[in-house]
Length: 414
Image (cartoon, rainbow, N blue to C red; front, side):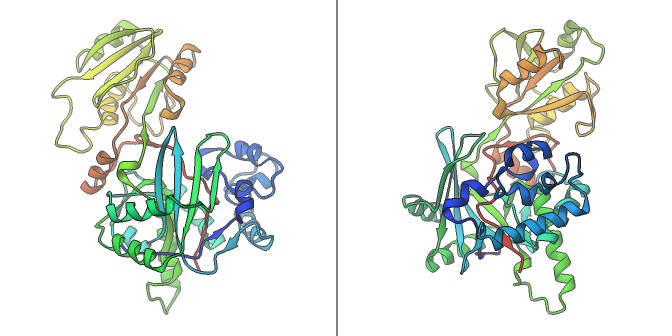
């Protein structure tokens, strides 16, 4: 892998909590408007600039992109964002429920994305790519990082732990999620050379979260290559900002399903249909969480059920066919409930595991939904196996938590 340090643009220490925000794609325009409130330093003015227009203004309005660039310039003019005088790598740590994961903030090369050495496991949508490309183009910067995983590496781990024992540049508890975020600047040339050398030995990096941002950054880099007759491959636009975590440290939560109806079946008919491919066991009225791969929890009529997929209903040699999202999609949602396309069906919704199984129970008990299905989380090893095989995961398969905060550091393309 070809990586490099970069001159980060970031808030002064005393302003970081005024500037930082959640990522653009985890909240809607009105939530961003409410969170920004009267804080003119909030990064939402750059990543969700529709909040500076009347309610109802489309986030895809050309004026909104122009406002992003205007606000980005304003933040620099006012000293709310300041560029480091020299290139650095950075360390970004997140602590959730007592567990800390440490990421290295790097410039990843667009060629590694284009040639498939940076591996993806999800399909991207062209409209979403185009939106992020416009944002990168107009700001001439990667305002928000993407989230990569790399195979565990002892040399990098030892280096990171050495910095983690020192005073961080930033250290705060984020509002809303309550997670701790810490940030260090790597300023030793020797340490930076070590990081570059260790990454150069890696055959692959894996996109954990941020498929659209990765695609957009690579496409804008390719555009700039074509526009530059003296292109060498070392220009800053060839790189985009990523936070890279050791695979074993990452937490992937369950991504659960709630359905509006049983496709015309009575509850007992639905349970009977499930018994063809699953061992069904009534677990009573207390919340029941799946304990292992290929076990699901069903919530129906105020009862929890364990569903264990029978031998022969999945293929252990197929990296997709062995996934619980695939098993449940094929044998429950499609075969019994006739919900084929998870991306477009209005009869299904998805609930990230951070909300807990109590949220599934609440949505069914309220009458909004008819039943809920809880899945055992996908593992990072499964994601890497799928990416290595060149296959794509079914939609709504992974929920990474905690999310990266935006605004801790920004990468300029020139």
